Image (cartoon, rainbow, N blue to C red):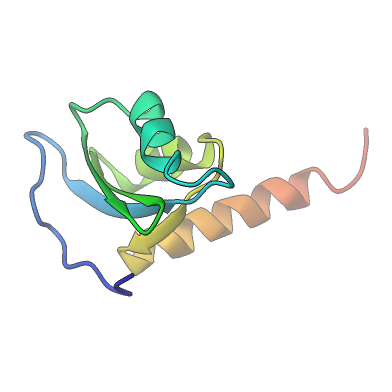
Length: 103
């Protein structure tokens, strides 16, 4: 699977942040079906590669994209852009830190 995806390939109308993410599941070839159920086709393009789903999607801001991707299950891997990958990782660290100890 390629390590880099050039962006933007095709930005949906009105969206300014473009991302390419990878979904991989334990079920062979199920990733594309799962991704298509979770993400509206109006904001995403789907491609199956080696049993995983490569999804290109857009958002109006980096913050919205981070929040959206953080809520998806199973978790996805951000392939591009690196700034989004870093922002998502930082968001996850902040959530983990906020939940280390009980009330």
